[in-house]
Image (cartoon, rainbow, N blue to C red):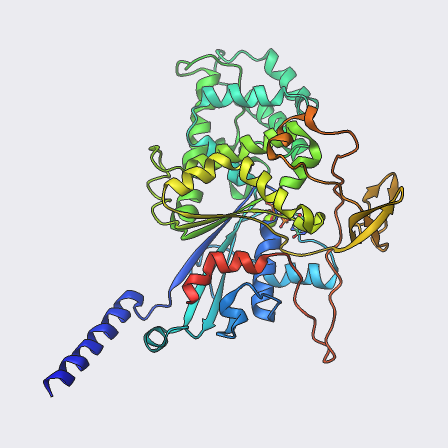
Length: 483
Ligand SMILES: Nc1nc2c(ncn2[C@@H]2O[C@H](COP(=O)(O)OP(=O)(O)OP(=O)(O)O)[C@@H](O)[C@H]2O)c(=O)[nH]1
Ligand SMILES: [Mg+2]
């Protein structure tokens, strides 16, 4: 009898522990979807939800493939002050109109609840079998603000002006740079001049945002999306030609004060509220667009990513490290839009991405996080085929270019399907950093395709959005939490 008592007590203790561990609260994974502007964050989040709710083809996502996942639904999100991610509108755009969602203008959040049966008998008895997946979407521009946190006004001014003078940017910056040449940073404070400089600086930021050839936008990210801070001093400043700290009452000092205000009023709260609570992270990188732009564009992408991802580095004391990496235990680096390449080139794309995010990847590993590198397409807009060129059969992709896209001088109206050979990636990842190593005629051809036309079942249901390796990404990001 004694034995059975002990067993009962043990059972109770185990049950209590389980309740304490999970409380009556459902376990939550807060997933960070990180990426520069146009990297594919909004499309990724939409495709992830759509595939889980509609039951996509996800053979590599084990809980789902084995039938243990019993449902997924959107539920009210935890943060009441953040707008809800407009999932329905994004789906309507992609599935209904076959158009991509608009570029994101504000932060938003969504909670997806997954219901599942645990694989182990004990866990099945103890755990509720529900998992909340909380995801935040935000404009990619804001990510580069992270780099500002470790800079002072003088250093930032110097670097921002140097970047504005580089080849692909200087045409956009001409008016602002010309004005800077006339301004004396040591002159007195001048609100009118500050406004004028901020306006010219903002025009420059807007122009590079619109230039498809510039890979990384330029911070401060909020200048183009001011919201209710529009016209406030924290958004009315500009870099100046300065060589050191200037005394109070001077224009440079006034700008420096506003730069610091921007950091404390805008940047710090955003990253503290969002990044400090992450459990897992996916870093989306549009490596193909950079590869399309050549070695300089690749270098631009590498330095923009290094500047932001270094904030996640452990072992280097800064304001964010203490908050972040302690919690993030898995990071997935994903090269997006892999449907622009034939699958034969996906391994090379992964190798190139690993090289581009190299340092961040090593640091994440060193900090004890599990790391994976993947080529994926959240939404697969193409199929594969072959084209014959000069008697040679080349692996090609087939898709419908967006209205207004041109290929070999031919303008498309969004109705015509084409097959094209997108080009091959180099064998040796390092070659993408060197223009000289690119053999003539091997340049990539990057065309924006429309989202795919979805088939309907006999019952009139639309199938879920096709993808490439979204299931592997899901397995890595949340698979263990559904074990
Ligand atoms: N073919 C293809 N194109 C994609 C895919 N994901 C994104 N794109 C393209 O990339 C563009 C940008 O994707 P978004 O998801 O809006 O990017 P974002 O990171 O949210 O960008 P911001 O909101 O500006 O920060 C889309 O308009 C599509 O043209 C994909 O999986 N396949
Ligand atoms: Mg977006």
